[in-house]
Amino acid sequence: MNKENLRALARKTHTAITRITGTSSFTISGGFLRDNLNSEETSDIDCFFIDRKKYDKAVNGAINSGCTFIKERKNSQQFLTAGGKTIDLIFTYEGYVFDFDFTMNMISYDFGNDKLLLSPEVEKHILDKVLIIKTNKLPIGLIERAKKFYDRGWGISRETKVKLMNNYLDGVNDATY
Image (cartoon, rainbow, N blue to C red):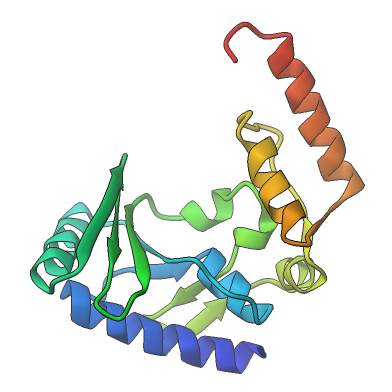
């Protein structure tokens, strides 16, 4: 899917979720946009809120609009819409997208400015289906996430493989893991 069509899909999706939640103060980020850019199936739609009151309003809106509650995690709740789409409502902090572990998740749609936030470098990683880790602070669970994408046909850059292995070895030597 080209970026203009992706932006139009993001706008349409944002409008639909606004009707469900009763608020438009959220950003769509991550896998939904990434998978659609690569014309792949997507599992859910991540909606990020940086205002707690608007997040709470969205959760209540989802409940009141008849969405089916699926599960709750720290600062997020997942619902199934009447149309069969899974939406994750996530309370977070401003600038969260730049802290994603893999660059391939660093894609967002800014509804306020009707703008797709996607750097050329990140776009290349997504279109080439190559995992690039942009941080050195890696939780041990990142290995499982990397494998999930590897199983879906994504490659892993040599630098990222080294980071994952070093992280694993550090974890094996550290009693906290």
